Length: 290
Ligand SMILES: Nc1ncnc2c1ncn2[C@@H]1O[C@H](COP(=O)(O)OP(=O)(O)OP(=O)(O)O)[C@@H](O)[C@H]1O
Image (cartoon, rainbow, N blue to C red; front, side, top):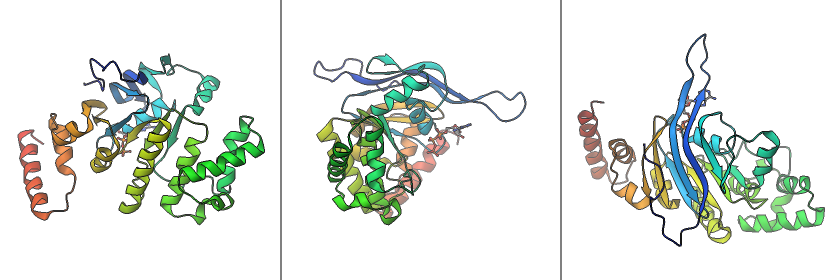
């Protein structure tokens, strides 16, 4: 197992915002006397303030489970999660909810993550009003959030179903930004979008980070996406991080055989190169006996 951390951070490196240390998550198995299923097997990872760590791996490798554990939504069996130096993996309901200002989430599916019965203005102002912001200040904040995600001011009066998928994801991002979080868990946030919309939404994530200094745990199965947004990348395989490092290094010179297979599995537009990669994939699988 490899921890996603540099052994000797440069003196100018910002401090770690999130530290995941030896995390084990087990899910209860269905069926009498069956042992629990271990979805995470001692995962360690850190994210600095303002940084994007991309989490890649095939379906079922444990990416979402790790994101859910950071959000306090998955059962932590062993290990620890620290946020800004404070252990958060053992926090109870109210204390944990108080952290939702600081740690937010953007899910894959903008169609189901927004309340279909509420206008975009209400979706964005609700968390502000709940925390005591005045109506006038909340309305001003909604206008500024819509501007931040490049949506027109009149979007506030419309329902989510009146928007395209990309626009809805912009609303979901604005919702996540409402209370100025320092960390956003992005779980496959562009997978449901077509390619050109994907790249515009990815640009928006980067632009927001440059402006606000928010950090992202960016979960995706798509290597081109992870390359495009991440500073560092961690590769998950069967509940463990098998490789990690700078995004350019891990994606260009993967060291772990599983990472190499994952890279070769990504389609490329050139048919000759695609054929070549298919051959490389086959010989790697034969060499690994699978
Ligand atoms: N609530 C649950 N109860 C039992 N098992 C679960 C639960 N959630 C996830 N798992 C199992 O844990 C493993 C990891 O799932 P997880 O969703 O974290 O993987 P993933 O890498 O995010 O996959 P995908 O890319 O398909 O979303 C899988 O084998 C999954 O079946």
